[in-house]
Length: 171
Image 1 (cartoon, rainbow, N blue to C red):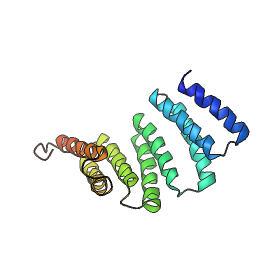
Image 2: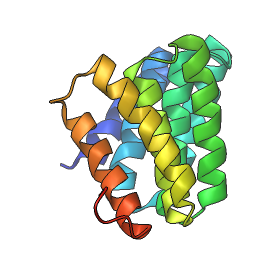
Image 3: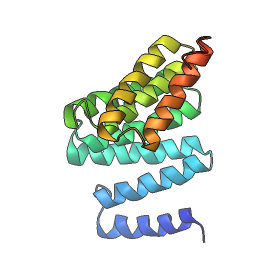
């Protein structure tokens, strides 16, 4: 049996025993959304993530750091669909939460800056994208170190932006 079948069985039990607003139920909806994203079924994934967000907002309120994670998931779906403005709104919401809940030097905050940079890069706003990537890099260097894969990914994206700008020596 595939992952979705297992998650569906889990969800059925959770809905009966824990109810629709339990954090474990939300976790299963998130896992189902992740599988659907992997399959390219973005609208179906979005439905799952919206259920997750609804449960989390009821249980935790709008400023809890896990809400930012869900905003990221929704933003990623929108990004993959080419809905860059919608993705940007999700990432901006996530950034506001990250900054309040986790602070400006947390690796999750860096990830959010990185995602915002990705949207801006896709929109051809290379200078703005570079600024976001630089912020992510600064945090990653402090929080994760110079040898971490997230740091390497950020260096790569900065190089890509500089290449698009014709700044070959800097890239």
